[in-house]
Image: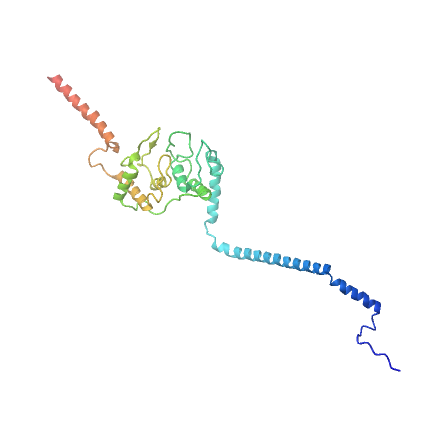
Length: 295
């Protein structure tokens, strides 16, 4: 009589048949569609978490690199410039906002927009005392400035930072050719300012101011910005060297002597005609009447 053959599966003796059937059913259930879907969702979640973690790590690394290099590259005057702009904002809100608006956009029937005028316009208008405006007239009066030089620089910084526009030049503003400046002045400026910068009357109660007391930077900024009736002479109309030549001419003729005698105000044929009619003809008539009385 033969003995029964041992089972090749070592688990066959330990696990009952009913247990094997239950385990088989569980394994079949674990590999079902629902479990595979859950596994895919878990895999997507892990990938998303990994992407978020990578992005956060990149942002932290970028911030660390910027904080390491930014202090070394920052200009020493950046804090001062920011402080100047803030001080300029305070001055603007106290003295200019009523006419020029809270965003430099201007106010209808009060004041023009300051967007695009730049620090050059601020320097000219405030340094010559034309602004702040006392009252609405045909021309803004030239008077002593209300603000100090430091306050003017602060206003310039604020307007330039928020509106942009022409900036003030640097260097010697008289480094130009006097003869060329004279030609350019007679061509572009003499019709309003007179041949020697004495100024003159314009229409509608306006007048071109005299240049006799003007500073180099005032003349240059006026050419850049074209205040009131004056046209704008940008770098496309007059190059920086040509502007310097004009300034050199204007400042030179102030110191020139009058070789023909009295300058008579240097206002041209008008003054000469008045002298002829009042002094010359008057002296002639006096002589005629005197000789008639003697006869």
